[in-house]
Amino acid sequence: MIAFSKSARKVLPFSLIICFFICCLVINPQRYIESVYQGMLLFAKNVAPALFPFFFFTKLLTGLGTANTLGKLLKKPVAKLYNAPNESGYILIMSLISGYPIGAKLISDFYENRVFTIEDCKRVSSFTSTSGPLFVVGTVGTLMLSSPKAGYILFACHAIGAVLNGFIYRGRQATHNFVPEMPAKRDENFLNTSITSSILSVLVVGGYIAIFSMVIDVALDLKIIDFFANLIKPVLKLFGVDTSISSSVIISLIEITRGCQSFAKSGADIKIILPFVAGLLSFGGLSITFQSLTFLRQCKVKTIFYFLTKSTQAILSFVITLIAVNIFY
Image (tube, rainbow, N blue to C red; front, side, top):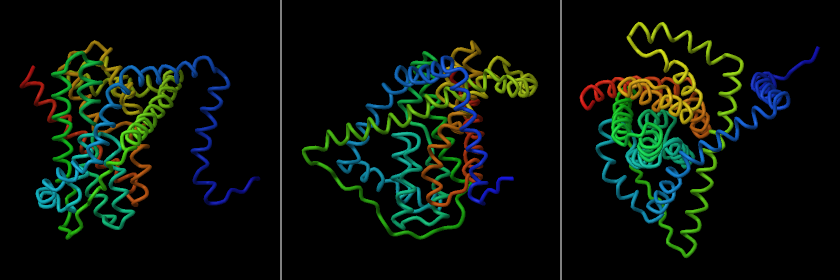
């Protein structure tokens, strides 16, 4: 009998899952290479054109010190509203501008520099985890749903949900005096550096979309998505919701970009689609979860706490969007 060390036992389930997907590639390479290709195509056509210029111009603003000025304007309101460090105003702005996972990355940076405590990281993460306007308005609203109006409603409700979510986890008051300053970069290579950094950031997002596209197709082939979709159909039917979106809900829980594309193709009424898309955008799906937890684990934010904050944020965004669609449609 093979004896496994404690550390080996911890990673064994993940190792088995990874081996399973490798076997899927070996057994049916044509099918799953095509899955990855379709994920890359989805990224190239719908995500990269929206994200890349935003990453680039945001990088320029940060380097020029513009974000620091904006962050300082919000530091007092954010500190009072959320009992959070003054620096969280800067993180909130950058998250709203750039989207996932910039909020988690900045929280990790402040923790590593001993500006945030573990409790600060947990508190700030509850309201600085958002998608960006170019993805929500440009990719989801305009390209997928063919409705910029829907995109603006989604982003507004998504942002309000995040802002309200912070009140749930505000905790006790904390005192912080540090004011963050991102160094201005105006050297002759600044533009090249911004381009390079933006390309790498966008490619990371593309990598997750491509891999999770394969995960979704494996789950579809094994009828796993159908199984869970059938489980939630009675719940949707109970509330008078079009059950055709059940598979889209499950897909979105795995990878939000392909999930939104599935919602757009479902043929369901946009008044039904938008609240679900808003809630699932706020939750983020497994793909964004892995991206964010990569940084948040470094500052001791537990996975269960992350899922709790994202669940409450998703519920808030769903309810807010449900109200909004009945006003604007």
